[in-house]
Length: 338
Image 1 (cartoon, rainbow, N blue to C red):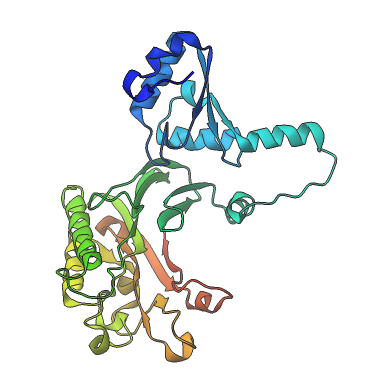
Image 2: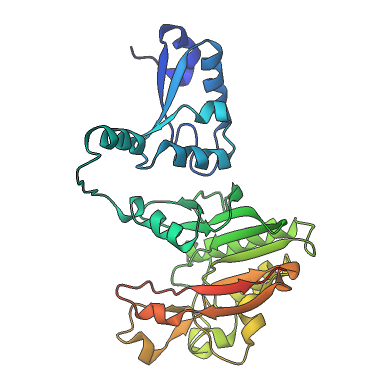
């Protein structure tokens, strides 16, 4: 039976079927928010004593996906209908191959990543990304209570995530940002990518300017901000002052952004401004370590209250020398709470 449900809705067919198979991702949620109208439709199906199954090809057990949906705010009566391809595989293995060897072929994220996180003590993860493009992710050793995102410049391009969790009865908020790189030309009149970068920073500034709890909140802001704000954050201020990550204009925009919530630069707060510090080295360099033409593009900012708990920071430069490394290296901050 074929009908135009966009026009007529489920109400036009609900009486004709006892069971509805509903795709989960993109129909009921997008990984960050639950679609309220979809939940409303599912509840209407239940009211008519009909059943539904929420299908997903996620290669993980039902319990894992249900836990994730619970964090997004999905009610138990809805998420109990979830069935994953991972669960189907587990059912088959338990029934047919429990005493035999079997081999899993698939992307690393589906069999190694979360196991490694668990070994390291990371029990919870939140991710928002666009395949083959970019994204943001947070792994936590503590249960994540809420996950939110903010869309900037009317582009839903996975550049922000905010999580909240409890630690020693304290509410902690973490923002993860990925600021647009800005292209090549530092002129918004001829370079739309640079124009996008400037507008993104303005909107991010506005987001925090509207918050009124500057002195009371425990907030950490992290991410690839794609700006090296100080002369000691680049290998040559003179040669890079017209580059999109170090122009006077973007530095001013970033300063306004940090001042919007009175953020402190954790790296400079603990290590001072006297030495060169980098977190990024271009792939173009034949010998990145010898040339050492780096920039500090990755940042950790802390709110005024959070800064009182900041103990130390470090940049793991040695990671740049690993086999097949990123051009960015980890930036680390340690906090202490009594």
